[in-house]
Length: 110
Length: 119
Image (cartoon, rainbow over all chains, first blue to last red; front, side, top):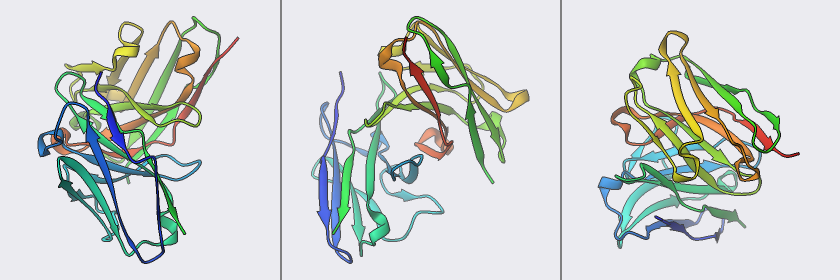
């Protein structure tokens, strides 16, 4: 069973920078896994931020960026705003089981 | 504007069945893969099933194989999830989502419909 692991929680100060990561139990995450990132606030549906590792949707704020870092997928928030406090999920694509979500990272802006 | 609206959720007894629907608008439905994702209360997201744009390929997470069936009707721009033999572990908010071009991920999501399996 493939497991995708994210930091359970992170805290960042307003205006700061934070990097969330996404690791796969099958080995290094590559662009072939097409990492996606989603933001979810309490009581709301998830909102897509990043697809194919680093591509932004038209509505994705510029302060969000995606990359590969040390064998993991990464989401970096630069110049964090209070409204960025949310749960963040990554999604990886595999051959056998097409999609697996990470467990989520609760980001606190404090 | 792309819109996805789920319906069909509700309370069902263990072992029962339910059919979820997702009405799509604002885009050419037949050009996109579609996906169901669920979220148990207080838990994370779980991918459930994908269906190719023409309905010729379907994929499921192991825990629902043989019990759930994803389907689509392009004439009605609608996505469906037939759920049989439901158990308490299937209690969740079910979201439909649209695949991106080249199936590189998911872009638009519906607001979700709650399924509660309980006696």
